Image (spheres, rainbow, N blue to C red):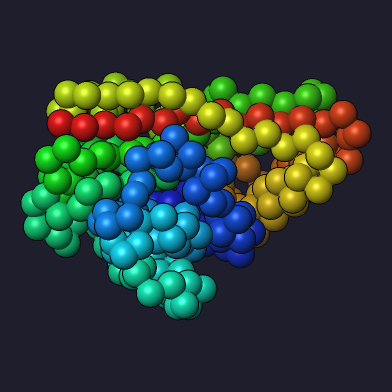
Length: 265
């Protein structure tokens, strides 16, 4: 994970959006299986909002969040310093610093889409989960995202993002591939489901569009697309304005579908 190129980067427009994620919004498929006393590993934890949510559900069990970015780990640790049973460390999903069978639950949210070898990462997660435990993974699918009304700049944005992500060795349409990756990692018991985020109300539309407009202009997305000649600054300005224009449409809806898998054995 330390050697992967992260298409989003860690601009505040990214980390702020990620810090708004909760167990309810992003890991509801796993929540019924979390109980007091379990030990949980959250891989690619980012700002740690989901990680800290797990801690409240499994106390007095322990929760460890790991991320490839030392800066983000420091942010997570500071933001959740008052949660006694959670810790955050820098880590590598391909080489987890844990003995075999160390955790009851291993969780990763929107991580595998950014990896060059998601199956290898899943095998490593399988190594550290205890017999009878769960590896829980959830991935969005950019190709399945849809919105209304039609805004041509958003089509261009998706094409550009997909080109960038694949150039970084990732797979933006990870959701549809997730069950196959999990099976290839050797899991015998796989339960597949799907949930979506929807941005439709005025505030939700504005927050989603403002986040992506800022990413298009200022984040690693902008830096990498410019460096690689995938777009010029004028194009990025136009795409950002397309996001803002969509957010002002009274009947605007943006749907982000994800596939989620509970894997055992």
